[in-house]
Image 1 (cartoon, chains in turn red, orange):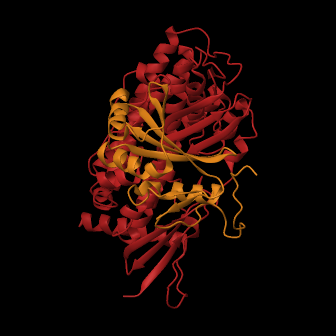
Image 2: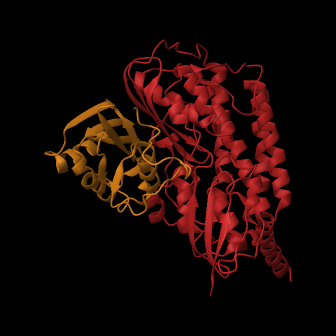
Length: 396
Length: 142
């Protein structure tokens, strides 16, 4: 059978990082995938060398548009490791609250898009509707819906006022019935089972070989989570659990993310309780960063963020290395997509949450004639039609 | 736990270790000659189940410095293998044949710092556009 190349990407307004997937297909079956990136390479590591440490935190906040506080948290962890800096307890709780609010809105965003890709547009509308109250809380306590600018070396930039605590609590509580609904919608729907179970499987060995992190690893039964493994902020001070699933398929990845949101709510409530009783400073007032090197990590919604920083004692880093979780997770598609069908490729590529796999500019080109073309909309349609087929068959 | 990890590496490569620096209880830096890196990386990855978080490349003006950051998740420890390679002729054996997850970061260091990773299966550009001139390395300090 003639092999066909399906280029997926590189640009789409939904993505925070453009990527370009070349799917090599035989009929419906994906036989190889090649990944190209660099479309969004802004040289942030190089720019960081020309910024003061205070500015670096704002700079790395711009690495990612969805999980914008992940890099600042990793960055302050790295600089505090470098300078052996102690952070006031109150600031630790505020850091964890911001980190978990972000996980909530990021996972809800993923859930909505995953729903859209498999033809559940109601899930899409609802997930994004329930994401709004989280962003409203962000606006209320930080002034911004994204790019909160809350982190600084030695503490946080803004306090959470005790007047705001009841409202944050109410929002977190209000999410629980929503999560129950989504959990039911995913776990009890036979069509979703048929669509996602056994699709895009990543084995434990694959996770280990590729160094995959976050929900991508946890859905394959590997219980790694920086919040538990290398504790920082208030994560060791409140009660919560690492969520894992054994199967490694797209279904397991969805379940991990949904169950993780319950844990995020738990962490937020635990931290809010502590904020009521723990007072004091929110900033250690760090004057300078000594010479040396430091490593900081944070469990972002997509997995471990890794920052390495080296200082020569001046007010700027001599080297600033950043590694985002998608850097490790995206190559796993070479395992999970290959062997599957084209109609499953969209949701499998999306399952690592790579900031949405470039579906706008998808086109199918026949290798021999170079003529036949499918648009990104067509590929989503293929995926949605498969769900509709399954759904009608199930109802008969 | 961090002590056990260090003890095991020391036990295996006692004669090859150039320097050990314990920055903090969970951050260990161990210096090796560049020839020993593949062996040590292989041992840490296969025998000790260390996860390669990433590799940092630095142009120190005298050398190119590479740091292989291995994460031991059960104890939250990061062991960074440090090696210095010649700035004028920077080459080192690739660890990608053993650790699949190193493929991208070695390609990135290759294009940004000009390091040649010997026996890398696919040493082409990762981030830079194709019309970027050959032999210009953005992270070099010229």
